[in-house]
Amino acid sequence: MNSASQNLKIQKIIAAISIGLFIVKILAWYITGSVAILTDALESIVNVVAGLIGVYSLQVSARPRDQDHPYGHGKVEFISAAIEGTLILVAGILIIYEAVSNLLGSSHVIKKLDYGIYLVAATAIINYAAGMVCVNTGKKNNSLALIASGKHLQSDTYTTAGIIAGLVLLYFTSLGWIDSAVAILFAVIILITGYKIIRSSIAGIMDEADTGLLKEMVGTLNKNRSANWIDLHNLRIIKYGSTLHLDCHLTVPWYFNVHEAHNEIDALSGLVRKNYGDSVELFVHSDGCLDYSCSICDKLDCPVRKHPFEKKIDWTLDNISSNHKHTINS
Image (tube, rainbow, N blue to C red; front, side, top):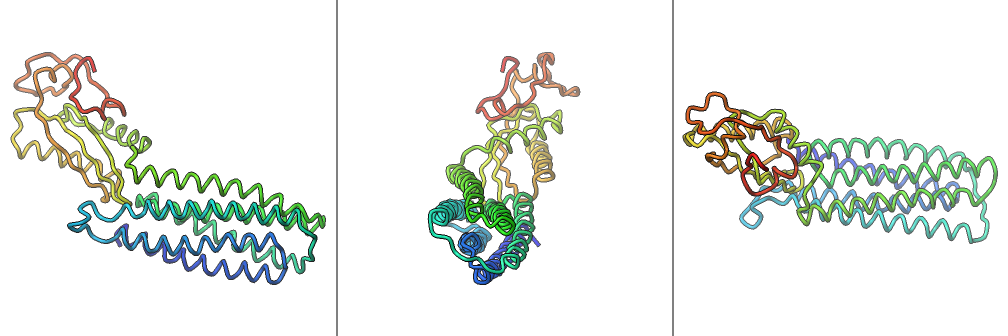
């Protein structure tokens, strides 16, 4: 099963789980009459909507590239994540509103609180486990939509945990304000999570450089560089959903024929795919070395060397991203 199919299968399972957990929370509210549990149930509506949006976005992103979308449909995942992040923010605001209303409102009778606690605790465990599977699979397959769904489920677990804590204290102390206060605290966590997801999705839509990924990739290339890779520059990475597009210029010995230069490109591509998966697409432009390249080239068997080797330049995030060949002074 390829990564796109796996992402879609996981997202469908998550959508089904979200619907089931929402029903359980509504049942818990019906049994207890707790406003805190109702708040958690209302937040779960967002899970259901987000899960269905996630299924749709992954179906679209899995479509093969066509004439109108030569890079595929993967960017729909950024739009999906933005919508989901917005829904999380709305849920956080709604929870705060309900909690404050409960604090300021009149007292109400809560029944069978222990049953409600058991049911809600069960949903929290299932939610967190499903969220962990989502996040891990999303990171493995570079799916922002799946990561967003997983983080949403985990943030829902934090909310539920806060509500459970409030319900337990309420059960033992009968202090009605405790569950609302705890709900407000965890609503803040939800708001922060929603903001981060929206920020990440906007960065993807705007093709913002993924500094963390670039640093990791530069470290991998430095560690495994070949003597025939005299220089590497103009490195850029763009995300299209689960697909990574990597562009760079690779400098090889000028006397290499086309076949030999292509072998070096294949070796570079193989190294990247070995470490980052088959979802990476590389567009590598090969350059021939120039006279000034001798001073930074440590190729021992070069038959046409004109200048002695002076210094090996380690590739860094700054110098590998620039659009010019490196020299001894750069």
